[in-house]
Structures are given as C-alpha cells and as structure tokens.
Image 1 (cartoon, helix red, strand yellow):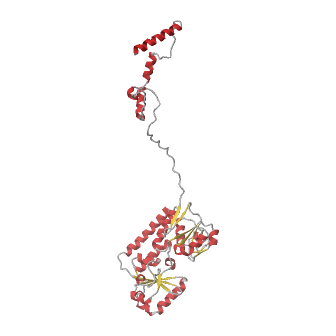
Image 2: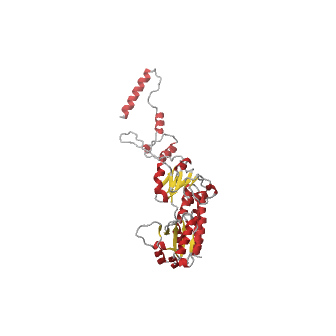
Length: 378
C-alpha cells in the first residue's frame, strides 16, 4: 500500500515539474521538517491519550497537574475547566452596624422596646426618680410629692400622681417615656395607651426590687459602671448589718400600719415586713389565718395579737403623721389589752420614720435596714 502511495506521489511531482518548466514550486503538503515540528508541539501520547478511532480526547486535569505539565513543556497553554471549583473567599468587610435597641422588661414579662434611648423621661415614683438622678439620667418631669427631693429633681414640673397621671402635663413635656410603679398598672394602662404615651411599669415594692431597678435602669441607659458601683456600696453595708444580726435570737414582731380611720397589720410581702424577714424576725401577721385571700395589709385583730404575743411592735403612720401618731398614743394608753403584750410591757413599741418605711425608700433601703436592725438587735 505504501509503495503505491509513493509511486503516485512521484507521478504527480513529475507532471508538476513538467508543467512549470522544470522549476520546483511549493505545494500544500507539509514538508518533513514541518511535520516534525508539528509533531513535537503536540503533547506526549501518554499525557493526552488516544481513543480507539484515533481521535484525540483531552481529559480534565486538576490545577496542580496542569501547572506541572506547563512547567515541564515550557508552554503557557490554556487550562481545561475543572469539574469542581473552590469558591474564592470574599474580601473582609466592616460589620454592618445594627441599631441599638432600648429595652426594658416588666415583672410580668411585658417588653418595652424602642429604637433609640428615650431623652424626655417623666417619673411618677419618687424612689425610682432618685435612683435615676443618682445614675446621672436626666428627667423632665416628676410625680407630685411632699417628700424632700434632691436639688435636680426639686424644680421639675409635676406630672400628677401614680394613681392619676396628668396627661396634659405629660404631653406638654413631649415625654417619650413615663415610668410608673406596677402597683398602678391596672388603673393606668388603658388610659396611657389611649393617649399613646409610652409607659413602663417598674416593680419597686420590696427591698430587692431596689437593686433590680438600679441594675436594669443602668443597663438600659448606658450607666452600667455607675449602677454596679452603687450596688457594690449598698451590698457592703448590707453585709455588715446581716453579719451583726447573725446567730442572735429571732424576735417576734408586729408591724402596724395606721391611718386616721383604722389600724392594719403588715405581712412579710410588704416593704417593712420584707425588711423584718430579711433580718431574721418572725412576723406574727403571717401566722394569722383569714377566711379570705388577703393582700399585704390585714385588719388588726387584737385578740390574736395577744395570743401570739410579739416581742416588738413597729408602728407606721399613713397620711398626716402627727394626726396618726396621736391616734396611736391614745389607743395604746387607753386600751388595757395592750398591757398583756410583751412589746408594750417591755417598752419595745417603736414609731418608724415615714421617709424610710411608708413605702420603698429607694436608695435609702439600706438606711431602713440599718434602722430596723438597731431596734431588733440592740
């Protein structure tokens, strides 16, 4: 077969030379040198492979294999696409700043949340107002009160009372937050919502509520450092009081809450009762059984008081202190039944100052605790 092909090529060459006057002309057939050069430019068969029908198939190579082959051959041929592609990590970017949320949570789980920290705050609670003033949080309005206030609070506009907020004044102050005790939530919630006044109801009835208030308000208003220092100072004084009372016999205590019309007994779920319990005292009012579910204040039952025979009686005045004090004095002087009570016989009946015991005294809770400790454990 090869001989026939060679003979045919010779015939064609002869005819071509004869037609051109014996001069050789280039043809489109590749010369041997060109064929060799072309052959050398091809990859080795072991690299590219050969199919049964002699067609060339280029396999998919990894980046490493292709790079090695290019280095070996000294060429910069285009690489075949890889089956799996490793994603290029994105260039690092600055984190997107998220808006700071102002958030307070009430004791019943209700969440008060705003996009920005309130700037025009009205407080209808004296203890809470004093806490915020001490933390350096500015207020624009305060509750009506006869109590002595710190200088920065004394001249603030009065915005009504917890039982009856003055809606007109609150609106005129452009308040973006009103804080009221949870004791008055039920009577105020609908009214405040009706007038679209943002209101947070804070728990501030008992001793530990004061520490919680300092903590949550400090965190919400960016005053955590001040709040933590305040709590540390108060806890240090508390520890001194409790350590001094440790190991001493627990006295039986009666707490009377007097008005111009009646006397009530306070249980341990009241502010003063809570302090007595913290100091290890036994509140006899907790032992009095009533037929109806009661609040922290229950009617005075002198017969049961005599039977339980308290060692100490604390008296708290409500309303006009002087008037209530006169009623107390008359009752204990003219009713002989009190002579059967150890507290009266031993002159351990004490009138408690209103500023410390009428209700939660805010930052003065430590003063209240120290005052009671001195009377309970002289």
